[in-house]
Image (cartoon, rainbow, N blue to C red; front, side, top):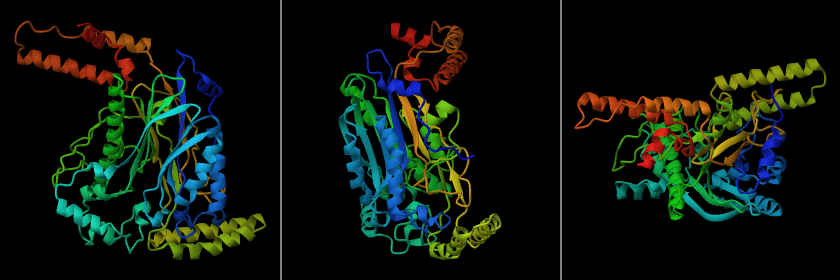
Length: 498
């Protein structure tokens, strides 16, 4: 059943946000929201939505209503698909609440020059560092001549699809690589994709530990191992860059890497290769989507440490969905909108229950016909948005999300009360040093007691194998633990004493 979209965090966690004394857990709320650029929201792209719900003015008003309670609770707000037409108004909104809004509008005219943004309350946080990183530029092209050619081709929008394929995940022949039958070059696609990572180092005014917060809007490629390899490259480059910057900041103050928050619209589903890389820290080389070295590229999908998903950690699984939409292929939008428009008009004028039922039945029949004819994509429902964390940070609470679609004829987003095709997600994070539970501590001590004795001389092959096997068990035990917990393990403590 569809539930109320915004449910306040429990009073206990809200109270934690007020804790600022030394020794208290520093709790910070972070929310992330793909707001859907106005340039990409119209009846030709979302023909199964109520046209009245797609107007820019009403959608912006609903967006502010969604953000208001989180801003009042001093949350860090990360946004994606922030258009040039909205970024100025959002600056005014955040400034009125004593916030600073960091933003970068990097995309094309076809998307409304959309980009990413991050708002933080200046009363609670001090901005120590801010960086904008074009992720594709982190790859080094092996062939400069090839890169020059690509840059020349990228100077104008595609005249076939007008750039909208970047949003839809659909690709016209020209975007695919100049030749219709050309294989998808994931290294080239990763290099030339315009996405920018927004990184901010925020230090709580009354705290001692700064926080590395980043937001990112991943490309949208799927449907083949090669396309997923491009997603692996971007996910890995972006996450590792966040971790590298956090480690550098920690090293500068002679401390450990800063706690990291990495959130946004990742355009990947749980179980996808890019999700595996983010949450495990590595990707199986046998995966069909493992990027193979080519044209001088030797980058490998490996993070410094695995990231942890806030929702998966707190609830045991990812949300059922954060995106539910039904869009049109880049060639069929107008026809689908023309076919469904009269059906929607009939539903609006229906009065009796029989008339309403007949109107909705006609709408759904026409909708199914358009899908079968290839003029309308099937309904897409998936979890695409995440709040990833790593380092000395714990997840105290996550924002409850609906478990089912909206009721009624308009069962996809946007709706009159949900202004985007994505849901707003959120988590309350604690900058604390969690201890090992008694159960984990007892299990660790039992495992440590089973350590094989060290060989007195040169170890035999059998002794080597035994030591390696036990070391592998220790590494497996540490998986999923925070660094502060891992440091309390008996074998770590013994190592330090030496």
